[in-house]
Length: 280
Ligand code: SAM
Image (tube, rainbow, N blue to C red; front, side, top):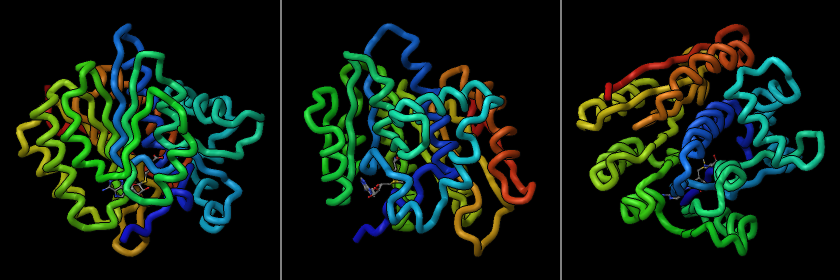
C-alpha cells in the first residue's frame, strides 16, 4: 500500500534541485529542432497548492522554493527553473507549485510527447484531471519502472527520462539500477535522471557502486545537502544521477549548487557534490 503523498513535500529543497536539473536538461533538448519524448516514471499529480492542509502541515516549501522566490541574484539555471514556477502561477504571488510533469508540459513543443506513470489511484485521478484532453500526453496507472522498459526506445530516438520514486519500499534502490541497466540496453542514447534521497548514506553509496559496475557510460552526479548526514533526521540531502547528461549540465550545476547550498542550508551546514561517476 503506497502512502507517500508529494503534496506534503512540494517545493522543498529536494524539489528545487530535482526541478532545476530537469529544466536544464529540457532546455538542452529544446535546442535541437527535432521532437523528443519525455517520460516520467513517478509523476505524482502534477500540481500542488502551497496552502493545502498537507503543504501547511510540513511547510517544507519554506526551506525550498520560498527562500528563492523573488530574488534577483539567482544563477541562470536556477532562474530558468524559477521562470517555470512563475509561469505556473498566474499571479505575482507564489501559491502553486508545479510538479515535474507540469514543468515539462510547459516546456514541450507541439511535436514533443509525454508519457506519465503514476501508481497511486488518487494521485492518478488528480493527474488525469490536471492534464485531461491533452493529446500530447499519454498517462498510465501502472508501475513506472516496468512502463519505462516497455516503452524504450521511443520512436523519436530522442528522450529525457525522469525516475523519481518515493523509495517507500527498500528494494526500490536496487530496482531502479536494474531498470536503468535494462532501459539503457534498449535506448543507449537517452538522457536519464534518477533522483535519490540521502536518509542513509550507505544505501546511496551502494547504489553509486552498482551503477559504476553496471557498464553504463557517461554518468554524472549532482547532490545538494542542507545539513550533515545523519542516521536519525530523515532526508538531509538529495541528488540526481544523470546518464548521458547534456554537455552543458555540469557547468550549469557548478554555477548553481554552491548558491543553493549556501541559501537553502540549515545553519551554514549546506554542501554539494558534483561528480563524474563514469566518464564518456
Ligand atoms: N515526480 C514528481 C514531481 O517531481 O513532481 C513527484 C513524484 S513523488 C516523489 C513519487 C510518486 O510516485 C508518488 O506519487 C507515488 O504515488 C508514485 N509511485 C510510487 N511507486 C510507483 C510506481 N511503482 N510506479 C509509478 N508511480 C509510483
